[in-house]
Image (tube, rainbow, N blue to C red; front, top):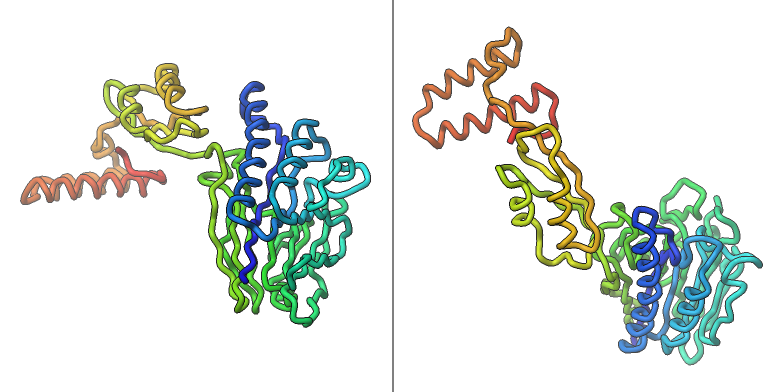
Length: 367
């Protein structure tokens, strides 16, 4: 029978959400607790054989009582064994939240820096895991490890940095290839990696299940991993996040920037936290952002605006200069005058805009 695995990591429970106001930050921490219940329901409803949690469940060494209770309750309701490999943010020690919480019988917490095995009852499967025992580790948790060739399915759950050079459990792909594991469930990288392999070992980062900033954009969630009877591995991404972080762009050129913004915004973002880059020609140095902020606030959970508009200028205003730019513009004016039709003139004007952008070392051409 295939083995069904729910793989998640990097929850960062009780993160401060410092970019939000105090009320929204508290609300977001509450939503993180609700995410745990959704994770448990997913495991239970789809019949997971085990849950692998690859570290950084907590954002630090302190945890609100409500969060600890929600975590213990959710993991106890998964209906299957749960394995936790603490990471650098939530490393295991005698003073960590891990040591203070009363875990359900179905939860196994790896407490040692070295890999240790746990045999799954009723299945020919062994889960290997290790813990960060300090906020950093410069050695690889997979160094020298080779799973025994005993006919059992061997799985790994670790927090670490594949091909990293830093202080967060650097793991070489050659170590993964030599490990003899069928699947290695990793945490630490907040972007989903997709299913990868080294040698005969498959591995993946699920990414974080809920974004916390504009460096964690888009849909977030966990992985549903199927290990087939032939040893092949299949991956399915399952979205879990209540809210997405998104970066949007809106051209607010024209006499009514607020209306232009309203027309440019998507209709599917009521739960999202967005950053909106305002582009185009505003006609003034610095937009009045208040009416635009009101438009955005009605569409999203939270929105921040970045004014990147430009004051319009005459395309040919440097044509009289005794410079390379002036020479370029005069030659283009001559070609424009000789253009055969409106289409050719439009193409030449577009070429002028890109040429000016290059000559003036601007990233984008004039609108």
